[in-house]
Image (cartoon, rainbow, N blue to C red):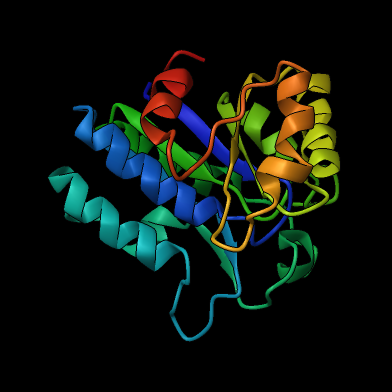
Length: 215
């Protein structure tokens, strides 16, 4: 079994796909064979997968053994409505066989499998299962991607507590963007004062790879 790392976030549009691509490149540079799946993607229209197409294209560049994969192998479950999977699927049950098949297919030729979630931890997949539960079902370690806007302290700590309550091992990454110039002044001091490690996507991806591999 490959090392499984589930890339989740404090909310939607925080940068999961961006961070996943950074990790794919960094792990490859370290000599690992990478794989990637996004178990569920919504907002898929006319055969266009906003995240899946990007991930598949990069995977084929980085891992030649993935040459035969198609986007449905990367995204086993997809829906047109851009909403929580449970709603987008019309309240259908999740087909875990498809997800597990996609994972097993890639674990045949990868050392590290990156699994990108959809939305935040408490996005519903079906009537009983939230995204956070899928991390456990797939026996993966978690990377919590968070933002650097005002409010990130609250959002980050709440998501960390949710992961800890489930007993999920995790690391946190702050995906600071160009306009997040106030983060070092209004948020980061509290985090460092509490003794928390503040890893950033712009500077600490190599360090993050080593941390994640050893979770």
